Length: 465
Image 1 (cartoon, rainbow, N blue to C red):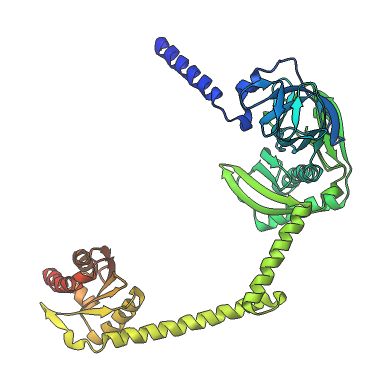
Image 2: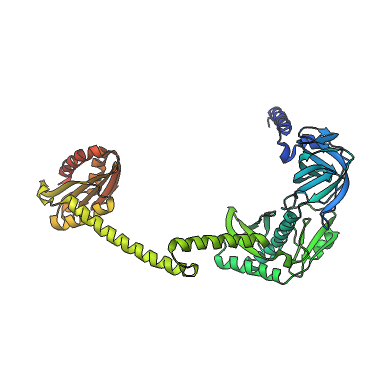
């Protein structure tokens, strides 16, 4: 083992880590600023049952240092002895709101949890000034917290419903809850079917309608395990934990905030299910007002689609079916017209047939005929030609289409459509290939079509036995 080399590499890595910490973005968590706070300072969360409280400021920081005051326009973090603001953890995003002192206002944009039991209110002073020791009023944004609680509680119901529908192998692999939506990652080996998703959704909505009381008990981790409460695999828990029970349906260890009764969630709607990693699926869902807004947008889109289809929303499916049939008929008519136009563009070309070592060759140049129509024309010309080889070329919008066909009789004498197309496609700046009886190619040089058709005669001559 190269111990000297290892130590040199370790020293270099430590220096990089120190440099990285010095340049860490403050709003994400500037560890150098927070590490300089007295380790004895802690914060008490009192927001489980109230959204406002008064408490003295213990620490103030700017983006780079601990300070005695924050003034109008400054970004910073405020720490207090007590706070009703929930800090981001357990998959639940931190609260937002305001901290006030008379006419002074601090807008809390995020709430973060730090080592040593500290809770930081990250934001900006929008008016006035705040000093260490000031007794301030902390007020959580109630509507945002309420919506987040609905999504967090619905996540507990969702996890149990997934176990019922998919099996006990389902385990939480991550989650995120805020006022807008909930996201739940879980272990499962395949995509969920529409039927499975509906079952899960129905179970969750049934438990919401059942108006289950949501009860929180604080107990030792050992007692919590005896109750059968679900815990996150690999998660570290303290001596005492919070057990959140929703009737007899769900029981989990959780430190987050929740509704008082599942009926408060009102509605639950899954909006997506997808894979995010090997063996891990992700469900995104909405609750309460989010579901109402989701259906309002759907209704608006439905009305707009119905207006575009010139029918009532209830008749939209039938109208779409009618339009699809009309489109099919138009495609059929269009194909007929294109076929006729291709024939007209080709004209009577049978007088262009030549013989190469006893095998008939018809090499024709056309304008503005696509590959599909070239194939149709080739089939029609084979019937007229009898045994032989057909080479058709057409230029359209700067692109070249080539097709070669050989009858069984011509193949018996050595003709090979695939080899012919390989040899002549280079003249139009392209390539292709195919079977002995049919091959096609594309190119980008319309000016090379005449040379390609002339080359076809030489290549066929070399193939005939």
